Each structure stands twice: as structure tokens, then as C-alpha cells.
Image 1 (cartoon, helix red, strand yellow):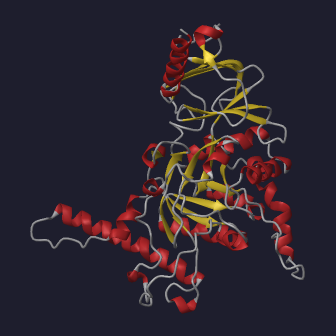
Image 2 (image 1 turned 90 degrees about the horizontal axis):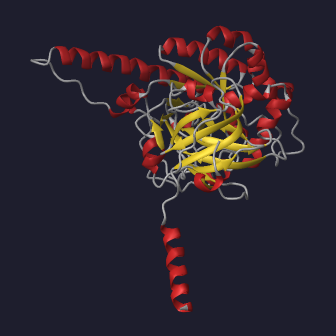
Image 3 (image 1 turned 180 degrees about the vertical axis):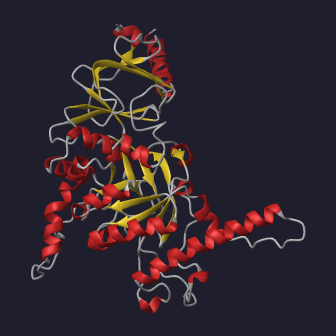
Length: 446
């Protein structure tokens, strides 16, 4: 009899281990910060099959839902990194001031390749990876994902990061069984970096060369599209245009991302965006404290880099920083507050800050610099979704949106705050040690 009981227990335990995780949840009686609307002091969020089914007070909880007691907890939309390489394991975290000079993450050093012919002009398409898709590169095996989920990040605007034309980004969720499961939308834009290889590398070997190269590419694209339109209207007897892999990649991108970290870059890229006649987003913004009025007038979407300028840890102690560098270090963390006060909308991204501790510290510096906490949360959620035209599916807690949620005890990014639960595509993660949820039938309902 004892052997039968033991066998029954083993079988029951095996069945439990094989059981599918719940697909229906109810976070009950929590404070809910929807971001898109009013804050709810005591409400329930219903999640089923990866979507937000409903949110509000006094909701009827389905019998199959697992209930999480939200008393003393706050529910926020999952945080979004508005520009990163998260999810692409081959791209190493950025480091150092060199990457800040172009406001773009540093690429992983590549092994030496077979020497290539010297690049002599834009027709050679140097450093052009416009066709490369982040959606084809992302993988759930990126070692950075677990740590950043643990502080509430559920989503990223992820871009490849090689060359001047880096490739087509994708909005991804930071969990999945395979890369395809992570993709929310693509392509969402083409990132442009002002990288120079020096005069010995051939064209483009200077900043002027890089800008002229990008300009020429978009002139070529206009001509290419016109030629295709003419051919489509007069196929008979008309030579067909030659297929251009690189220009096709540029044509697919709904917007371009231009680096604008320093004040002169902001001026230059604001003008360049008008010249290219493409929807544009400016990223960087560390010296934006000198250009607040100009940015307000330009009315372009902005991405503010959370990796604030600071003295390098291994800097030469004999190096004396310039006055400009010191001013940027002192004033950059206050840029989000200045933009908010001027009514300029922006979103946050992290470059060179891939660890949970670094991101928490940098966000705290922005809040300490005068940014209201509610505006900081918006810059990490709905504003980021709006930049890419995807606020209909992520960025706020609304019925019908993807169930990307973070549940905290305390205000986000404070030292003593704990992230109790994170939902990515409706899948539950528990960064903290918390009591397990229980079926609604066992816990009861309102």
C-alpha cells in the first residue's frame, strides 16, 4: 500500500512538472499606473493568452485565472528601451567615450578578414548594412536579457550595429522560445551612425565624407524608386532597372535614426533630416541643454541616452578635461527635465548601460535632476512606443494591448524597491522571492 501511495505521489508530481504554465492571470487590488490615462488606486488587471483582457476596479475574475494579490503593489506597463542591441547576442555591450561621440553603441570587434579593395566612392556602398534585419538576428539566449527583465524591462527597439547604415530595427519583447517569438513589429527604422575609418580606409574617410555618402545614398534611392515607377507604368519596351540590394533596404525603413549628441550635431542633423525628406528621429541629446528651443521648434521625435557623460574609470589622471566636457557631465542628466518643462516629448534609451545596476543608477540621476517620476515612466513606456508608431500595442495598460507588465513594491528605480513580477507577452517571471499565485477558486474573488 505504501509503495502504491509513493508511486501515486511520483506520478502526480511528474504530471505537475509537465503541466503547462497558466495563461490567465488576475492582478487584484493593486495600484495601476496605466500611463495612457488616470492612475487607478485600487484595480484589477486581467491577462489571458498574452493580452490584457481588461483593467479596472471590481472586475469579475474568471474561474481559471491565477490570482496575484496586488495589495501594496503597483502595476506599470513594461519598460521599453527605445534604442539598443538587446536580443542580439553577437553584439557586445558598448563602452567608453568613443561610442558616445557618435551616440551609438559600439560594435563587437570582428576578426581579421581577407583584405578588400580600397573603397573609392559611394557606388561601392561601403559600410552599408541597410538590408540587415534585427528580426533575423535576435535570440532569447542573449545573456543580458535576464538581468534587464529583473528591473522591469520587457521590450526593446533593437537595431543591428555595424557600419554607417547599421540596418533595420525591430521592436521585440525580451522573452520567447525562439527569436521569431520575440518580434513585435519590423522594420521600425534604419539607424545611421557617423562612423569614420580614417583617410587610409578610402571613402568615406571623414565626417564630411560620411554625411555626403549618406546624402548620396538617399539621392540614389529617390532615383531608384522613380526608375521602378516608370518601368512599372511602361513595362513593354522599357529596360528594367537593376536590382539594388542596399537601396531596397533603405526603402523599406519607415524612418531614419540620426545621431545628435552634441549641440553642433543637433544643429547639423536637424537640418539634414529636412534635406533627406524622410521621417527622422534624433538620438543622443547629451548637450541638448544648449538647444532646447531649437528642438522644440524642430518638432522631431527625440531619444535621450541614459548613459550620462562621466569620467572614464581608467582615465589617465594627468588628462585635464575641457570646460565643455565638464559642463556636459554636469548638465546632461538635467536634459530630460528641461525637455519636459519645454513640452518636448522624448523617450529613453540605454547605450553602454546594459546592467540592471547601471540603468537604475542612470534613471535615478535623471529623476534627481528634476524630471518628475511620472514623466520618467512615460519616457520608458508610452513615449517610446509612440516614437515608432506602435502605441496601439505596447506602452500602456489598456484593454487589447500586449500583456507586458511590471509589478513593483515601491517606486521604480529606488534602492529599496523590489520588482515582484514581470509579464512579457503574458508570460510570468518572478525576479524576487515571492509567494506563488494560486488559482482563483482557492483564493476567492471580489
